[in-house]
Length: 178
Image 1 (cartoon, rainbow, N blue to C red):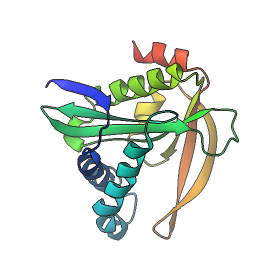
Image 2 (cartoon, rainbow, N blue to C red):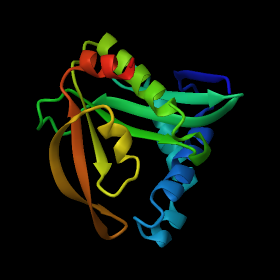
Image 3 (cartoon, rainbow, N blue to C red):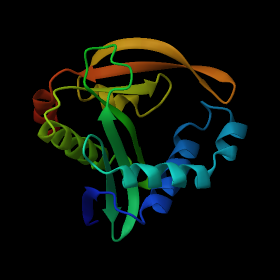
Image 4 (tube, rainbow, N blue to C red):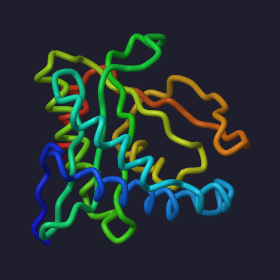
């Protein structure tokens, strides 16, 4: 596997949407209602990611993981949305196709995101994770601080999610280097 991590470019939005939809369907099967997962719109996700790419990378970023020309994962981050935790950025999304999980690609994506944010003079990062998400162990391996737990509505149901934070991007990067 020859893996490239790079900023998303115009034309990547369809592949990013594919990863987004497929990873939701595999990761959240048995957690979120199947009917909701089946109804996720790739077209809507494609338009969302097209907008993110067109927005540019002044304050936020969208990195993709590419294996032999195919986008197999992505990570998206930018200014923290609530301003309620004393954290200046948020990892909004990180998803990989199932066959590419548990191979260190997520760590590489988070590392690129953290470096990008640090270069923009940000200091800290937060991520929200569904409590039942099996990928939660990935975040715990990076020794975050647990900031809050709350309920979120998805498809008419409520699910618990946890906010994890790294108050120092330099410390996070040192954990990723190990």
